[in-house]
Length: 368
Ligand code: OSB
Ligand code: MG
Image (cartoon, rainbow, N blue to C red; front, top):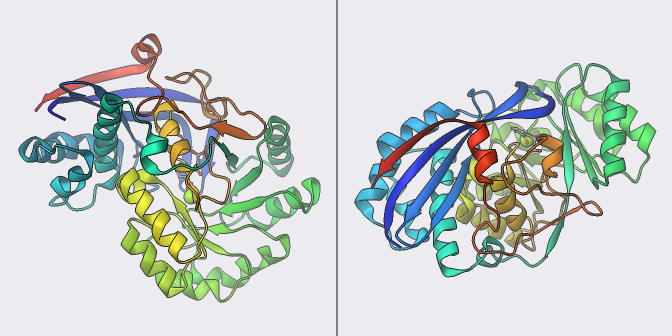
């Protein structure tokens, strides 16, 4: 593998409907793509950092800056001959895991395409299709929420995740449980909107048999999650707090989570995501693949990851149509509640040149 350079590409992807969480409303995804060019192939990495630093400290323009000024130069100096050497070359730069993940994924995609191997095979996938859940945003009213959930269930999604926040929690959860019955796989995601002092209120969710409650407390508050886990019956799952295999191991040891949401961007890439899978499997902790409203590029890699054996819960790996009227790759289409795991070299999908040109705002080339 010999690196020639990297392209940073800013695209704008309008969502089919606004997506509201406890940290804000997204109507259009501004995505930074990284294209790695080597002597024999090219590869893509989608940076999951959002436009604003409201879900996590990282944001798209910050990621672009650290890629241009630090990460790409570090890689250019290290001249890695294979992808596992990339993380070590980037390690002197602290944090910026989403930017690192995008870069490593682009290099991995290029390497795998050159060698004719798929992400699924490289990561250790054991399934050729994965069951899919859908993350449902905070709505104007409970009837609007019930309509949205009804529509997703009609499409075949096998699990519903409700975004919650103070003022939108027990009532919508109760309404969805009552309307769709006890068999529905249902979970909630607070995106850090609560405090430990809300424990008694969160215990009011206990009767609804949620699969899990995702990240009720602040990102840094792993100990608080361990305390909360003793005060509520709903299993605690961590998203924002899990930034590496080491932090996953620590959270498990502390009793802060019984389930882990794995997002490759949040943890620095697919190789670290696989290590989290391994750590969790060793502890009997189920994992599932989270999402960051990815385009087809990020989705292809996520679906490959979700096909690993420890991913025993449905992921936020929804079909392209749940997010975008027109994806930049061939769309991922739900089939019986599942998405197919791509089998072609690398990500197994590529951006459609016309679609990509249509949604591109800016392109920057960094020679290596
Ligand atoms: O917390 O899981 C989250 C989207 C953006 C940022 C954070 C989160 C989410 C989602 C949607 O819940 C997941 C998806 O469908 O991609
Ligand atoms: Mg989450």
